[in-house]
Image (tube, rainbow, N blue to C red; front, side, top):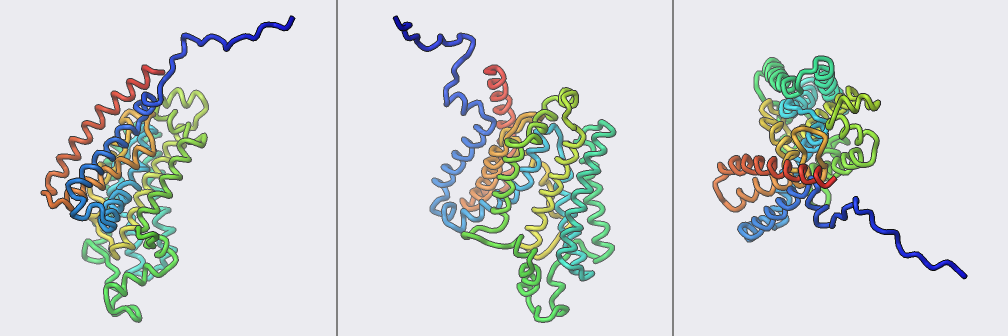
Length: 361
């Protein structure tokens, strides 16, 4: 006679089923997603009729989010790798000046200035990463030193060459044929191939938003779909164990430092083409805001844990809050207070989520 049909194998009591809600709550970006939804709902109610939901208002807070989100992506990957870069803000000022000053005062082709400024960004990242690798010093200290070095060099060189702290395309007025207004001067840059790349608009949104979207996709793919992404988590979680497993720890750190410098350079170029000027004061405190975006997004200060998606929502929280307060006509002096409280809450929440995730595993 045929054998009796057997039922499904008994469930392994050692395996615990985890529901979809619990899985979502254990994700590092959960707090940022929830926070962004709360902030959006709140300002939609209190400032929706004042312009927060109008196309112009949406464009404004998206642009603010994008500008911070670009450097926030670089900071997120670096922090997952267990390092910090406090020279980002100074890099923004240095890159903008290094690009525009030769173009305006020495007549460099724009494409040459572009190559030079990205080569400089790569060099700064290489130096930061090499010093951290060779000396074992905390990246906090190394990049803090470069924060002052870059800011001082930018200020000193700019004043020595121009006698001021700002370089503007308005210098083209009267010196370039057909340039008689500030708008004409800015068009000289924007109408070039490089200029179109950093100043275009599509679907009513500025170039910064599309650059942010493209870099987000690239960073997410790099982190989640490549071996290099696995290396980043490994280096940030336990560098010695990663090294013993064959991960090129020093190489990963250098590439990540070069990434933060490159993100700062992209933001600097977007600002130059949008405003038609470069200033030695640009990027002030942006290094800390980039770290705040990463932390709000679920990245731990201890490294080895974080998410690109969370950084996106962290930037959205920053942009919606800063512009929402302005659109609602509240006193903007309180924004920094809110940001500090939000950072503290995010750190506590992220530590709780990480502890729950660790216990579940």
